[in-house]
Amino acid sequence: MKSNHFWAAGGKMLAVVTVAIIVVFLLAPGASAAVKYKVLHRFQGEDGAEPVAGSLVFDTAGNLYGMTISGGDYGYGAVFQLVPNTDGNWTENVLHSFTGGSDGSAPDDSSLIIGADGSLYGATPGGGDSGNGVVFELTPSLDGSWSENVLHSFSGGDGAHPDAGLVFDTFGNLYGTATRGGAHNRGVVFELTPNQDGTWSESVLYDFNGHKDGSCPQHTSPIFDPAGNLYGTTSALVPRNQRSTVFQLVPNGDGTWRENVLYVFPGKEGELALGSLAFDPAGNLYGAIVQGGAYGRGMVFKLTPNANGEWKEQVLHQFRGGKDGAAPFGGVVFDTQGNLYGTTLHGSGKSCSGWWGSGCGTVFKLMPTVNGPWTEQILHRFNGKPTGNPYGAVLLDGAGNLYAMTSDQNTDGLGVVFEITP
Image 1 (tube, one colour):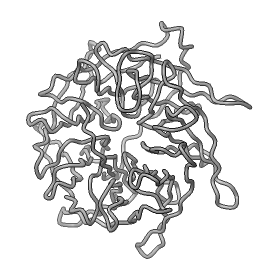
Image 2 (image 1 turned 135 degrees about the vertical axis):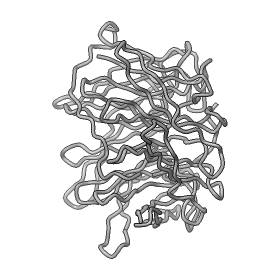
Image 3 (image 1 turned 90 degrees about the vertical axis):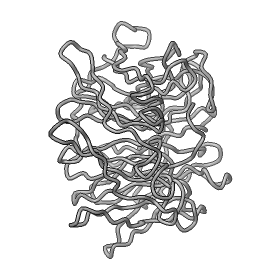
């Protein structure tokens, strides 16, 4: 069962691996023969359990990497690698098992990123010197082993409970978010800068105060625009009368940053903006709301900048629950033709149940039309036998295949890594 904690996060990218996407149209939902679902790995506990972390990542050799919130040698989660074999199967290697102590604990909703040297970077919301979480690096050795180095251990005043992915700038600095901590205990956006002696120094770029600027940036990995501005969402977790926001951080040139609130979600529509944002080539932002919308089951939105600096929202899809899906925790990702892909934690019409609704979850595709609304296509409905409940975002490879994980939160398994082939 996924722990009911609320944490958030933010890794070194002199060159983060980018996977080119070639789009292949998937057929209609009823044409199940056109879409193939395959389990690549089923977790057993010692090798990890409950992979609720954000999304998977590829290296240049085609290996997959991810994290689990529990399991491993000590029960506090693991970092794993999946290596493709020539026979179509995949072999799992556990790269690191978290001890729950100074090395970190329970990487919840955090994605890994890969640096230029092949090292992995991520965050855990628990563990560290004071239990407020860490940012870590895993470095491969020539003998195939991996060693962990904690880059920063949060104290609370500098942020607490980072539970999202990190992002690099072009200089190799790392950026992320922490759900709590900071001057007002409403979360922070932080930067980690490498020093010549191998250590890293943290700077708090922005302290959320829980008022109009938002609060608790939960599960949101910040993203850059070409001008070097950072974007993310706040969850409105604390206080409860707060609304979720989309924010921008702009560097001032003197090392400080200023926040602009781009959009405040109105009323119940603004309940829990979780997951990361995505840009299209025109500079529009896309994201997902977990709970809210007309049916209270979440929605996918688009924000378009106007000439006056304001941003206009367009709702692309509102989830109804049932076969349509519910609770899109992982946000959305683009293919090169402008289609959006994502997962829902619940929905599908099957018998799983949980905090955010009923159903075992779905994988969906949203397709734009020329002059009308976006069209949803369900690529896969999980039935809970034995797998279901995907939390994170999907990853697309160069052939248009999709990869993601299920947590099996309310089923009889410990989670899987799966592939969907059009």
